[in-house]
Amino acid sequence: MDSSPCSFASVLLNWFSENGRELPWRETQDPYAIWLSEIILQQTRIQQGWAYWERFMQSFPRVEDLAAASEDEVMRLWQGLGYYSRARNLHAAARQIVERGGFPQTFDEIKTLKGVGDYTAAAIASIAFGQPVAVVDGNVYRVLARHFGIDTPINSTEGKKLFASLAQELLPKAQPSAFNQAMMDFGAIHCTPQSPRCLLCPLAETCDALHKGRVEELPVKLKTVKVKTRRLTYIYVRCHGETAFHRREAGDIWQGLWEPLLVSDSTTPNPSSKGGDGFEGAAPVLPTCLGGEENGTLTLLRKDVKHVLTHRILLTDFYLFECNKKPTLPAGYLWIPESELENYAVPRLIEILLSSLR
Image (cartoon, rainbow, N blue to C red; front, side):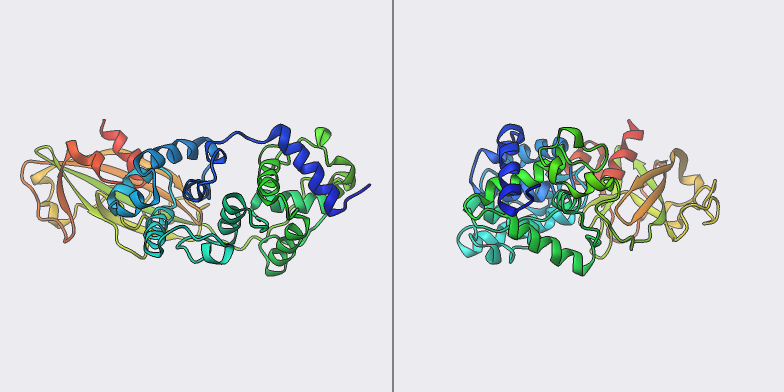
């Protein structure tokens, strides 16, 4: 069994030549288009991210166009993708690129862009500029851990160094772009997390995990994050065709996005317990600013809407308060014609809640 770097790369490149995915950002060497695809796909499936990439390229065909856009325009186009810090970083980096007079061309220079880490910088450097820098993402961790039988946790300091060094050692210096894309595709569509295609694998003869029956065990990842449950209660205030929204501030989820009146926000560290947070079945106490029930009618639209983020689970109740007289709301809230709400970028959860109004 030959598991030498040269053999591994050769087999993988042959597989890629026949099975690689046809993607629009692979039909260009424009670093802007490639960078945009990498940022969009950081936490997004290709099926969903593809449409966003096309919309961004249509609205902002050049990095100068993206840099000149307002934050609201960028966030509105990003709406629904989640992890909104990516959009803010994308916008800031576009302005960095314009200020420096062009797209950086080396791994180290690309890493100076806002929101760009080792993986993204390596992908851009190798694909757009042919630099021999290996990418290491979840797909690469999985392929390498299984093939070479590595059980060092991929999210440990030791593991990160080990896998980065191994990926770089395997990289054929003359074909960095094809090899990096081959590694990503092989992990995404062949050596998948569940039900990998081991019986049809071109690397089956040299795969350590396959021969030792450890495919499902690898890669190993340390569990370090405790998921918390956060309870939110929103009231959509409606008055003569207008509604009150405000822009979320920095320091929390959904920075810069818009939301209706938030009247309750509580976190509990035990998501498995029921009724332990004091919210179960309870209607919200109307804020005094709304003027009480004599000023309008409160209706429950949605209850316990579950929305999962990386480190927390959101459970949300959504109410409609219809009134004839505009209440005096807390600072920062704006009255917006309901017909113009689509011009304001909102989190995916709020988008789901607003569908209740239709």
